[in-house]
Every structure is written in C-alpha cells, then in structure tokens.
Image (cartoon, rainbow, N blue to C red; front, side):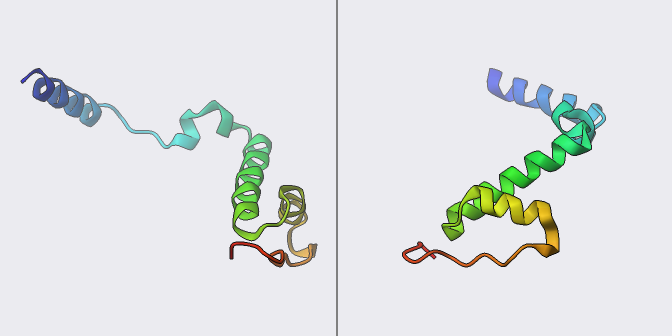
Length: 79
C-alpha cells in the first residue's frame, strides 16, 4: 500500500511542477559550442559502430559538413 501512496504523491508533484525542456535545464547543453562537440561525438561513435569507420573520420566529416567525402562500410563490417 505505501507504494501506491508514494506513486500518487510523485504523480501529483510532477503534474504541479512546471516542466522545462532538458536543453534549458542541463548545464552541459547551455553552451552551444560544447553542445555541438558533444553531439558530433555522440553521432560519430554510434555511426562508427554501425559502419565500421573510425570515430575520428566520422567526426571530421560531421565537422566539415558537405565538403567531406562519403563514408563506405569497411570490408567485413556487420552491415
């Protein structure tokens, strides 16, 4: 029974509190340059896992934008 009471209290608390987007409350996302670097590293590491390319080459491509060459999966890559 205490779980139900705690769950209800939590629900009421969350409904009464103003919800702000994470980008407004997370200090690591407030600096646009730091946010961009973190986003590039996140995308680069995920893409490296999927394609077999290196994180550095993917990060370089993302930083350079449209001027970078297209990545192709390595031989023996999972995909």
